[in-house]
Length: 292
Length: 292
DNA sequence: TTGTAAGCGTTATCAA
DNA sequence: TTGATAACGCTTACAA
Image 1 (tube, each protein chain N blue to C red):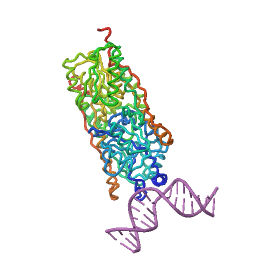
Image 2: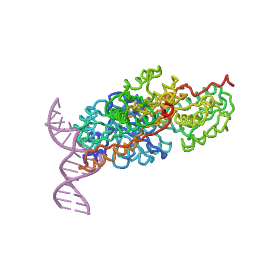
Image 3: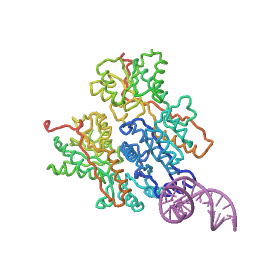
Image 4: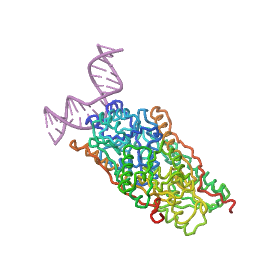
């Protein structure tokens, strides 16, 4: 194989590179999302003549060194900021696909596979409003990229429903899960008028639900909760979590399909692929219209 | 890199091969385990001059073709039966490490990283007995390899506690999760004298708990539940699951450390590495001694 | 159609 | 010590 690669000047290797700028890289694939994505990538590429090599690093320079030293034929890149994506794009001239990247106005210069972050949040917020909620909290650990789009969807849904901007309250979860407890404590102590919480990720929603329930708050009777992603845990927890579903496996398939097109056809163009999301209405949101 | 590999006759590639006779991509728990394992492997190997290439197939022949065509320097193999492990061993003569393999008397011919399956089950069963349970069910989807060891631990703990063999009842979950419902229905209808259930995997335990609770059975008041693995979901569910903890990331580290030793030192010998487990006592098991 | 030789990028060997 | 050259295993282009 190495001889073939040397002779043909291609490697038959597809790199899966991950750029985690945080120190959460205790085990980067620990979260369900990356595992499912990777499984989908492997499954879709299997038997098509390419093989997946993985490389995880917080330093873009390491990533660029990796891709050029292995001369990988294509790249699937996860977790890259716009700045790092630019660096990578500059160095690596072969087919390159980002997952969940956000590149602003520069967007059409990159091939990206993302989801309808904005629409999902807009619809879920509208659902909450339709269920009588007039004070809703939006929780995220950052307000950039996809999470910012989700936040925009949230804000606009509130505006379009004719509610005052104050109806939507923004909470930032410092330090991820660790920041969740102090934030939830606030609610446990009754310092908030919010009747519904919309978390930008199921994992946060579930962790918050547990904290609240452990402190005597009933869900959805006392407060409604919604999440995003439809992770496995969303249907395992009780009450079952109402959330926005994205299909990670299909995302992986779309990424591979596009990547192989780019490899096989030099005329294939960059594309911003947006995968659909859909609401999964379950048991964590209460209709408070009648009660009101 | 390919040129280096060709000249030096080694690839600097570590293969991560998975052999599954089912379509594992639909199995959430296995995905979770695999993801964490893979993340651990990558982290431990990072910067040591080797790179991980993944290949998943249900056919051993495909796996052997893969490893020989890429001339990988070492292999981490997951999900191989004894028969398939033999085939792989026959073809692939370089350093090879199995994860959670069971090779019976032939064990010391293979390098394997496993856990204390037997002891974990023995201790958990003893814990259940110490909490007054005299009728315990053991649930697994198979009774080979590690699951058989867990079953042995279960049976022997019952025997050593002086209970009759009938105190331990064995349930086989046909078709995995799908087989769980009919089995649990049996309990919902009150056809069982069992006071505690010991599942060989947290995912089953959690799914069963939900089914039971959804049908009005209280946990742990009506029935106690214990699991195995300490997956993330074990501490997310309420009541929190009492389970046997294994550290998957450490397993990955141990596998890489041994593999690199085998690669760098031709005199390094095969070894059966057994990683420790420990009980995580939480809220899903009730002490029924006093109530009795 | 079949066969032969050059070349891919690096290492390793052997002479100078 | 330095420098030229064969070898790694396969592809491809060109000649027979």
